[in-house]
Image 1 (spheres, one colour):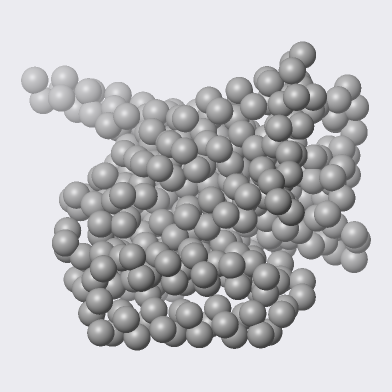
Image 2 (cartoon, rainbow, N blue to C red):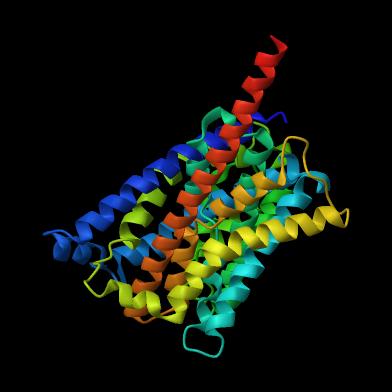
Length: 390
């Protein structure tokens, strides 16, 4: 499969960002459990105005992350890997299974309890981490597998955004929501008038973010909405959408996501940390990500091909889909993000984060070992064929 230039750039950025995320996560956990623990954790809980530093990152900077996700989704839908039903169907069905099965397993254990609202936690896939692990396997990875995993994670992000908007909005201030909607409508008119200057869109987006924040709907949704009113106009290098997407890639990958990881993994792990893993909430997260993700992705992809809705690419095998499903169990960024929205009890949040880290580490490890094994065997077979030919 021939990869587009835009996809290659996207994959390379996410690959490097994934490696950086691994490093800063380990650094944050180390600092949170060192002699500077109190000062380190205290810094992230420092108030600036009515919000902590962590709140400003989660509600503010992460809006820029969602803006980039929205711009990438728009490009993929209009002229990228998701631009045709044929290309999009397999990862769409895979992503659907990768969301429904983990959520179902979680609810099976937590329905009717105080933690049932955490069902959205194991539904997410961290695109940077997943691609970062896949990139460690080098050139042996089939192009179709790169495309499948990337498209799967992008669609997964869209699903997580919808889940946040629908299920994690507690109370709505309709006047503020209407003002935010009015601003979006104005920006849409600018789009239809083919106004390419980014300044009015960015100013309008900032005002829309404020009213969305005070409306009760999570403010980060503003990023996705703004992405779809910024002119795409064919997606060429001179368009506003293209310029903004390429400008944001490095700040998001190398500043915003690492900052989010630092702020949200500063977990002081006590001697009784393992007790939290006996709770149904933690068990549901681990079961959902480690088991539910690969089972859901493989099952739904297999069913969609079996009934003829889509076809399996020539260089992609079912064992590759299973490996992608394992890497899909790396929830991290989005899982932690949903955890913060789902719970208010600091203890539950801490145990949930530990469960997410364990599940993501487990999924990443087994996904890497499994794919390394099957791709290595493929390389050996190729060598054997060449030796026989010679």
